[in-house]
Length: 199
Image (tube, rainbow, N blue to C red; front, side, top):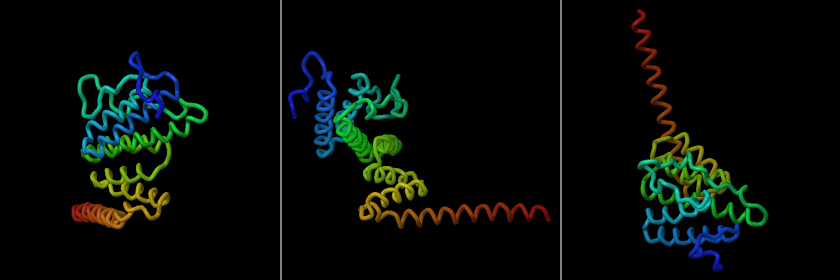
């Protein structure tokens, strides 16, 4: 990593290369914190990268859940690979996909499932990837959204048919089948009760 990875004392890097290296350094620090079990601190490092590409401002809501004047992640202007041209674009896309996935991983540990979904989807907006489908399926399972869990696991299967997370697919499909049977039984009971009232 070159010296551009560390922000100069007077300010942050201004060249696209310097910005990207600075973000990569934030990602590395976030990864170290995540491995040390410091998910909240890791989120701060990862979001520095996102904040830096938002006109060099930090997001006002680092952990979700509000606070005066905080902007939900879904309404924050997010950086785009289109913001960088030429040979840096692929590197930029990889960093952003990794950062979104890593934030989703942190929120998985913190059991903040709505944020897992937010950042998993943002990762998919950059590029389809297995990690995002895994995180989205985990969040859907936690919410009991069996159809969404199945959809994400099938997308994962199309990308990586041998992924370990696919072991959850039979249980997801069974829960989905059970829910559909319960809904059908409720509808039958509603109609049966209505028929008895007409006699």
